[in-house]
Length: 140
Image (cartoon, rainbow, N blue to C red; front, side, top):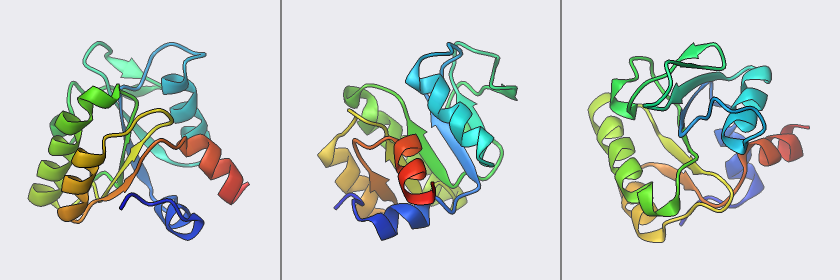
């Protein structure tokens, strides 16, 4: 079951490094402003966007597999229909590297079947919740 309780969400927020799949270069879009907020609150944000060289002053990667650094959470700003492929990449990374232990699907994004498969492989999943909103609410 995806994580929904405050204690579990707060524990996830102890992360250091967040890879943001779909991180946008456009200020004013949630896919830009939420990662910027997270960065301002001390998280290392690693943008994953094949159409950008740099986002938020960090080099952007074409795909999750290309990220060299250890990742705690993969934050997803892509349509729900792309979630299975993204969570497959998270599962693969988790199996091979032992990192990427959580996937956070932003507000309006969910896929129960893909989330269940990721959870079966030991990955914590949050669906349909904004990481910025939850951080502000829980860590104010």
